Image 1: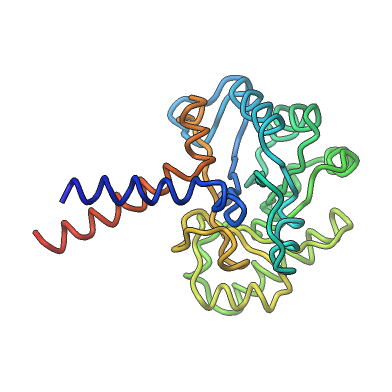
Image 2: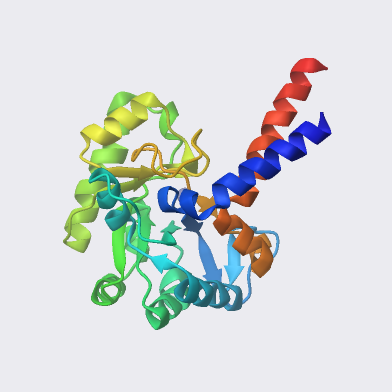
Length: 260
Ligand SMILES: [Zn+2]
């Protein structure tokens, strides 16, 4: 059993990391928080030095494109440019402006920033203006109050989806076309409502998809955490290898539970 598992993983890893696969599968990175000293015990908070190393690596080895551009290519059935990748940030952690933006500007990398609209008051208008001026930030919605969307009534859902879109559009004075499901939580109804609210794309964390181009309303993202401080881990994440280990790991676990 273990041998089958490792062989399948190895073959799958080879297929997914091959040059051909990379034309069709684009990693979308998910960041949360960057600060000079990463908060201990908070996996999603990474330190500035690691972030700088990762951005330099992407600049030198990848073709970083706005998520919107990648989705437009996908809609036109075009293949992605070689080594395409997209960067996204969730939540309004004030440290995005202070610690992540200077590095992003230094390497001139486009980023989609998913904002919790109910917390917009924590962002100063000058901050929003400065981010817009950089020309690198695409604003997008991360709902109003960061709820588990699948647990909401239809009315509440409308508020979180349409409401956040309208409010954010007013605030940043540009159209909002993308949504990040809070906690990556969604179901068919949430997806349908997201579409009806006028979003063209929606991103999650671990939907049941392996390939980024499958469905524009449930795009898979790779969470970058403190483990990614290690550049070897980071590179493996970009190649999709760790996704497969994880995918087959959970498959194996499910199979074992069924057998035992
Ligand atoms: Zn979130």
